[in-house]
Structure formats: C-alpha cells, structure tokens
Length: 538
Image 1 (cartoon, one colour):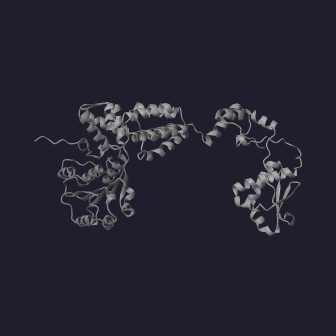
Image 2 (cartoon, helix red, strand yellow):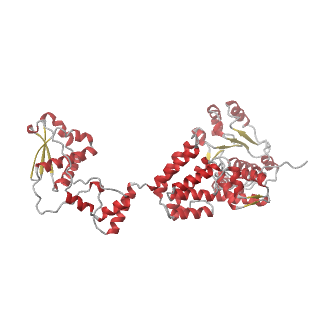
Image 3 (spheres, one colour):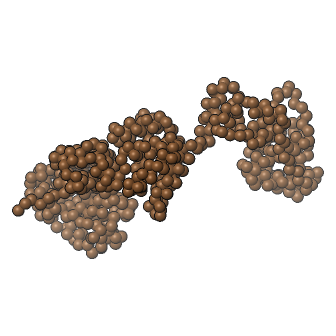
C-alpha cells in the first residue's frame, strides 16, 4: 500500500525545541526549567494562530515523559516519544477546548487526574483554545489547577488570553509567543523547498511570508498549495495570482506616489490593481505595514534596526526615509488607519480606498504647529535678523519705543488696557472674569490702578482678589501700558453699578502696518506657508 501523503505543515512540524522558529524566548526558558528541575504544574501559551503554541506543548510533553527524561532533548525513539508524536499516548491527553467546554467534561478530567500515569513520569493534559471553556468549567477546574497531584501537568494554549479567567491566569506560568518575522519564514521555506526539490525564487517566498502575516503554519500551507499549482518551479507572479497579493514593485510605486503627493499616480495604480482583481482590503493592510516600517526608519539609525524586512524592501524604506519625516508619516497613517476598519463594509472598496489615499496625501502636506514654529526658527536663523518670533503673524504689534520716563496714560488707554487684561483673565478663569463685570475703574494714580466694587457685591472682590488673578491682570496691564502696574481692588460707594464700556482693539496705523509687512522674517514666512496678512492689531 502506498504511503499516504502528508501535508507540509504536519511533515515539517518541529520535533525538538531547537527546530521551533522564532520562539527562542519560550523554548530556552522551558529547557532551563527542565535542567534546573523547576517545573511548574500549569503553563499557558498565548499567541496568534500557526506560530507554535501546540507544537511547543507537545515537545514539552515529550521532554517530560521521555524514557531519558525529563530532558531538554527528547530522544524521539522511545515508545513514549513515539506515542506522543502520534497522538496516541495514554499519559498525554489533548483536549479541544471548543468542543469540550462543559462542566461535565471538566469534572471527568478532574476525576482522571487522580490516577497515576500508565507509562511516563507525568500525566499531561494539553487543552487547546482554553478560552472556549465556560465559566462553570473554569470554576470546576480551579481547585485541581491550584493543587494538582504531583504527577499532573497542565499545558494550555489560547489565541485570546483576555477571555481566560483571571483566577486561571494567576495559577499558570504564561508565555507569550510572537509573530514570526518574514526573514525567518523565508529562510525556513527555503529549507523546505530544497528538501522537496522545488525551485522558488526569493521574491516568491517573500510574497508567501507577507501573506502569512507571521504564521509559519499558514506559510507552509501556502507553499504546499503553490507546489500543487505550479509544480517544481514557483515564481512571484504565481503567488500573486493564487492569493491575490500585490507585487512588491506595485506596492513601492503606490507608497512612493503617496509620499511624493502624486494623487494621479496613486489613483491609477489603485485602478490597475482593482481591475486585476487584487484584494484591496489586503492592499491597505500592506500599505499600513509598509508605513509602519517607514515610521520606524525615520526615527534614526538605532530604531531602524528594529525593521525586519527583505533587502529590497529595506532599500526602498531607506530611500523614502530621506524624503519624509516621522510627523508626516504619522499623519498619513492616521488617515489610512481610520479607513482600514470601515473598508470591509464599504459598498465600493475601490472608491473608499481612493478617498483614504487622497486624505493621506493631503495629511502629508499639512504642517502641525510644531512644524510651523520649527520652520520659522530656521528662517529666523537663516535671515539673521535677531528679531523675536511673533506668537501669531496676524496679531503682532509694533515694538514700543523705550522711554526714560513713561508718558502718562490717557483714560482711554487705561480702559483699553483693562479690557485687554480681563479678556485674558477670562481665558484662564472664566468665572473670575464674570465677577469683574460689575467693577468700575476708579483711576490710575502713579503706578496704582484702582478698581472699585459696589458694597452690595463685596463678595465678588474677595473672589477675584487672589495672587494668581492679580499676577495675570498686572502682567497684561504692563503689556499695554508699558509700566509696572500695582492693582488695588476695593469696595467703594463710587463704584455704583456701572460697568466699563467694552473697548475695541485699535487698528494699527498705516505706517506701522507697512513696517510690519517689510519685516524680512514675516515676508519669508508668508512665502513659505503661502499665507496672507488678514489684520494687524497693536
């Protein structure tokens, strides 16, 4: 009888800890625990599908029950190792948490725990997708899990650890498995292809790894499918055709168009890919993943080492990082991320993706306030004017001419200064400004400005008269009157119920506006940011 064909994912399942790809932080810890005889009674392996959770649990079970064990290198030759590998061991029971999630099944498991193992040193329970157990089942397991017989070990695996009860988590040693990087998947697929006498170019293997999204089992299954489709020679176009992925050069052209602000080119590429039947949802995910790597690349040489990608993609990322900064990449990613979750529900995925790309291009061209200030500082240094940066170009006032003896302030200028000060107070403490509505200016004598409150509203004065409010009001008065002003808040019959008339900010004189427009820094800022001066206030 001919030997039955075995799929690659099963044929190439690791048999030793050293064969597990990309999870050395887990396998090394388990090996050390065996060597040091520090074995816990319950372990929880967490991570996405196809990255080795159940595989590691089986290897660990072999290591514990091997005739030479516990050992970190099970022999794979003894009866115990072979029985575990073939899933027929009486001492290692694999349970599917999805189909055995009731309290009755857990009670049965709890009863069998009392019996000693038939052959090995331990009775081992491997429960896959443990998060599928019901709350009643979890509670039935709690006592046994906390104080199991010395010959019992529990090995749990789950893709959704957040659904496992905290009382269960606290009784387990938890191991979080990582998604496997694309270079490691490509390296492993090369070994499989050589062993299977299949020729697969690097571009094809990179496309398979990209489609697997960090899952080795998915990558092996995809390679198996492609061998059936292509025979002994696999090229990138075959991978793209079978799985609807986008070629690396098309992805490079699309991301270059977005970075360079070429809307027409970006929309033409989307049209071409949509007409070719490519998965636009997957395309957006690939674009976001590319921009994530680009963001890391723009943060500096040290951060760039964290990017795991093929050499061709690294070269593209380095070139793009020279043309864009991290702030712009973040803004583009915000626009694309907002669209990713809604794209799958869109009636027209192409139109929705086109809108998302246009928004990303517009976001790339925007400049945040930090960027504006940085650019103005650069312009200031370049021009060498030595002038202080205006807080807002449209609201800059001409500098006051220094005077040896300040000129007496007129009544109108005092009222204007008081209105200016209270306006700023309202931005910081709106309630304090409201209590000043009934106050009346009693005059400026020397450097002392007196503000009166009607006796009926004496409580308002107490509310306003705080060190913080005084400091703010006095600093704003100084800005307008150009002298140090001491503020006196008093209760006075002269205040009555009068309310100061609101004053309008006086427009600057024509000569002052002309001088302002001729400032070289302002002229250069208007040129760079394509701005116009709407109004100048003093």
